[in-house]
Amino acid sequence: MQFDKLTLYPCYDLHTPAITERSVLYFLEPINMGTLECESLISYLIRLAEAHCVTPDKLIKHKIYPFFWGHDDLSTSDKGIIGRTFTNRSYIKLLNFSGWYTSKLVESLEHLTLRRDLTCLTMMHWHELITCVYLLRDCKAWCPSCYSYWHQNKLPIYEPLLWSFEPVAVCSHHHYPLITQCPYCNHRLPIIAPNSRLGYCSHCGEWLGNLEKYYKKSHDLYHSELALQSELIKILGLLIALNTQASQNESIRFYRQIITYFQLKELENIELSNSQISQKRIHKSMSSIKHTIEDFWKLSSRVALENCSKN
Image (cartoon, rainbow, N blue to C red; front, top):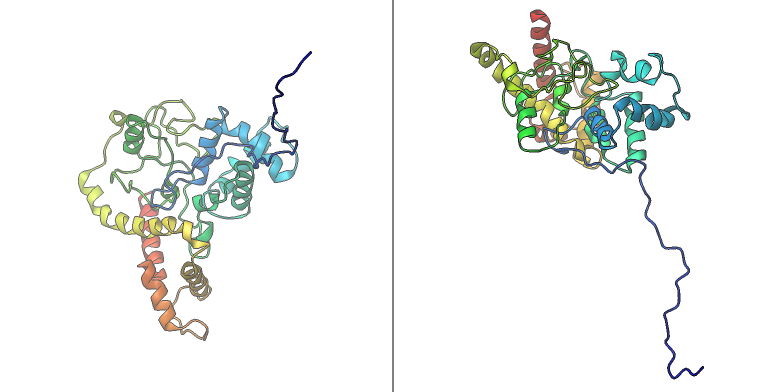
């Protein structure tokens, strides 16, 4: 056989191509990070489960729990991971805030999704300032107007971190009182349940964004509390919005040191004996935050006491 022309083909590259690391779970983007309306960690966990077409208890049991303890949770009773950790009120109310379980949950979710910013969905950066006394809810709260708007505009349903705080009684956007009881079955909803689905009752499964099912509170009572609520939302909202800068920004880190210093002195009118913290630097740091520590505690204590007296 005669070959007049030979075709030259490029050589095969037998080197293994560089493959970027793949995440176990979707690289899901948190909602409104760096703003007052930033998503909470529990909301992110429930959305992540829904994105994988599983219930939160399945995601926790088979993916998160092994990261916690190094083995699967094979228990099907209430003594399993769901009953023992994530639906126990003493633990669950801290998951959007700080503590060992919160840091471990953040660590596990970041490991599974390869994200590095999920701490910003909690108040871990501000644990020196915020304590859980009177501030964290035992049950879910929501704004039906937000749910309705997001649903109508085909936006993702989620729960802002701000809704996790007990003194926050109104929606920062609609100025509508937050709801804590299902209008269909009258149940108070846990912050997270084995079958939690954002925007729906975990007891009866009904949609919680139907505005016709809610009775609006007295207009006079609402306006009497609005100014106080607005101030509280400003303070908490500013700290939530600054979460994305708290670990990188030097001035924010210094502000956290000041918070710790004041808290150790029980937030009283103290004489600054620490020569490393000058009055000028303190004033500058406080000015950038717009509110003093005393302002926060007076306001949060006042709201908490008013809520306790009503109950």
